[in-house]
Length: 214
Length: 122
Image (tube, rainbow over all chains, first blue to last red; front, side):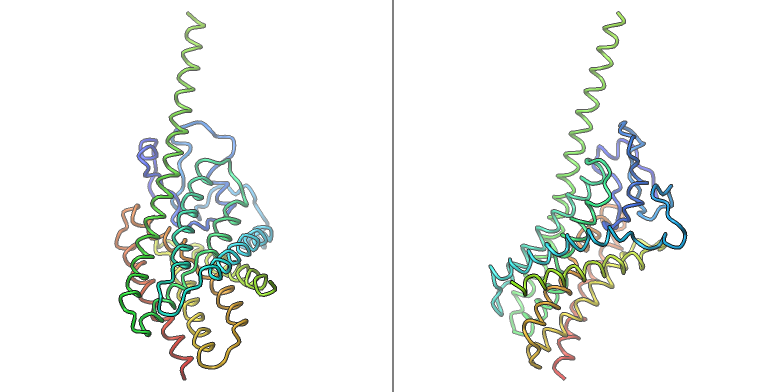
């Protein structure tokens, strides 16, 4: 939609994808392996389905099917995400009419992990095919839950605990958005730090070259 | 122990369904509104409401409720993606879409869950 430039990236306004469940093939196309040079070459697409060169070109018949390995990896991450949520719910049971603290904490912490992960996968770590399906789509997706939140709010309302219901509804929303923002900001701070370090190194190596020539 | 494993397997099934449905809905869609996540969260809220109501009023076994509700519905719906997409839409200057996503998801999610709970009362 719009191009990014180096300044935008340093400002922390780099266009991360809107959909965190980006197709891994598009991921690779968006972030080609050998280019580690700083600058506009590293910008991220805003459209996760951008028709870039597909490094994993498949036959037309199977192109629209996700590779079974990606599905297997999602299943593994989701198994542990769902299990973690279940065990936390057993450890901190929500009594009828009380604030569901376990679900609240799960959703907020999962939002932080997902946001931090997206920045690390797209801007810090070398391109990988399976980290995002494993931890993002699988673990974070299954660990956090929207349906339990909605049913919990409805039940608190029908139990006459309107104030608790509103706290739970608004509190989860605000804390979740805050945790997402914190995750993105933390990740972008790491990206900016690495970029500065790399630029300093490049500058020093240029100085060394000039000294050698003098 | 067995129940915990079944919850994990249910969550895996839910997450794969979420991924495939989201890919199918958002593929070749130009709009910024995250329709895939919206549909997933609303349908999952309805099913969990229905299961909760069936467990409370129609003697649905707690084990089935845990595996399908906590496992499948919990793994299928997602809060983290909802939160991420809403925040990214705000950052992108499409604040109206972000507000629409938040309000639309909450209103439809609460309504769908209430509908499920209500149908179970019949």
